[in-house]
Length: 393
Image (cartoon, rainbow, N blue to C red):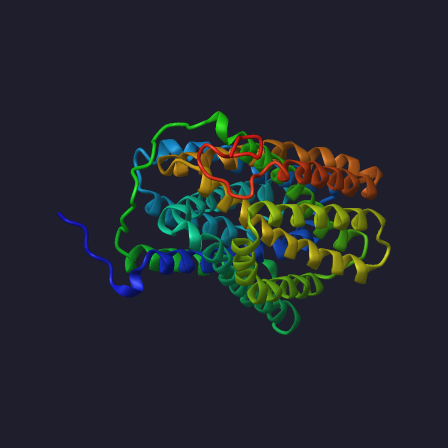
């Protein structure tokens, strides 16, 4: 039976935007509530939060398995199923306020999140033209941030005015993601892909710089994801309402600037954007190591989040140098590479955290400097056969 032709509103970009809206309803809410939930309900210390974050990254480390799932499922179908798992894991979190319970629901949520992110990257690079990719990636961030604003506002409303407990909050946000995943399943036909993707592992020597940047990004990002927010709660005693408002500010800034950042990347180039990102992050991590004021720490957190939007340029850099048939497989492989360090760093740095907060962030600054040096190897006009500046023009 021939596939139905999509209507105008059933364009690939619309499906990507719908799914991008669905993700933060679960993940942003889970993240905003996590530190307070873990400390108040499950008596977590830095050691337990580090272990939990390492467990959360294991599905990302195993993202190469997406290649084998594609033998059975289309990428579009797999993305929607991953959304359902993300929502389910989030919805169940509040029902298990214990160390083991939080570990298990985190892994379930993380399987959905990481496999969805893998598919979103792959589908966007396949469905969107190279000259529009940076802007569309920025638009996806903006839409996701708008959804996060809704989540953070509802968290503030639920905790400050309605006095909802964690069980109801997690259930509401996880259930919302599941409903939107079902809408994506029912409202959109199977959309065509221009290039048949490899259904096996792809590792190519000429992609080595992209792999190296991806590895360092995973190592460095964990310090922000795990310990920057934990610093706010443990050192500066931020409440769940204050954390939600901080996340709300971050999301609002992304709504305003993410698409503009995408356009800026298209204008200044992937290399310059990454150099700017890593130079800024190295200074921000040094600030975390020295900060003694809660207001200054919050300001660093907002700047940190804004600089990460520049990481769009890693995806557009790969899109320019890639064989089109490699995109799906490399999306899974790159997520695995991204999570090699991410699996071990939270637990290891959680132990370092017990003796020195400053050392954790100093090591993050060192990682940002290494990434900066790698970024200078990207040519100003990357393309197949010209993946680094060492290649002859």
